Length: 371
Ligand code: TTP
Ligand code: MN
Ligand code: MN
Ligand code: MN
Image (cartoon, rainbow, N blue to C red; front, side, top):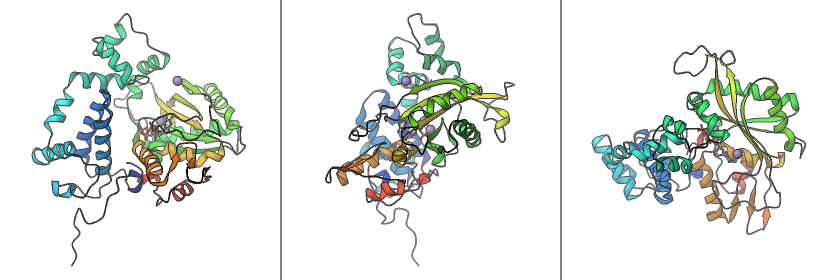
């Protein structure tokens, strides 16, 4: 009889968009450790090792087996010497000295804390650290510090926003968004996207794509939806960005750049009574509501498939889709479209399957994109 061997002769692609990665992570003990190191280098703004650790993490998340010895790693891509050394330590001692050192590093701890505030990125966090600030009360009592509106809101709702959003809460928010959008245009198209579309149980926010069949109408859709949410008493915070979309522009070469669609970053008030099974609260409080982060993006309908693919993530999956397009197909992909450099033309798509087909990639379902 044939016995299944863990690291059987199945080749694992170096591209996340050619791997199936569900939310079931068999190698969490390794990926948690490697993510700490990735974040450490991110805070240090050293891109190379940061990306290397993220790529390694992403490969390990796709494996259908638990790595039990270094031999299991033999034929896997994206695992460098540093990664393998960390994994070897964990295999042998159940933990990594370097990771534990990083976790107790003062700068790492402080930047981790500061960047957990909505509106505070690594740059601001590092500036505060270099000013000698170490805690929220340091920041909030330091005379020279100016907090922008986003950061003020971030501190105000810190407890709620730093607590994970559950699937039940995402569903309740779906109904709220659905109702608000349909009050504006009954024929609106609304799709859940982001981590919840990938089947995650918890998220840091809830992402929706909303648009209308009428081209051009989407430009004024979000302002109307925002007014509606405000009128109904749901709106706690709104950062709206109007569309800067230009049809003629080539897809951008950058991986992390924001797209040009109209979008808003919101904080909404979610009532306990709207959530089946109640709120995801650590301690029962008597408020009966919580604040939740919600993102809305509104592409024109003819870019719906590209926007949906781009906003479904994961970030590593998106990054590799673009890298694959560029290096393997001489095509440029971003949230707006796909440009074939050989044919010198944009490729139209009405579904995500069309885009995978254009790229000559096997279709990967949303719940298999948790790279
Ligand atoms: P996020 O909501 O940041 O991440 P997530 O939903 O995968 O995970 P979490 O549970 O932590 O919320 O982003 C979702 C996707 O949207 C991600 O792939 C990046 C993409 N995105 C853009 O393409 N453009 C943008 O301007 C923003 C803000 C996000
Ligand atoms: Mn999200
Ligand atoms: Mn802004
Ligand atoms: Mn989001």
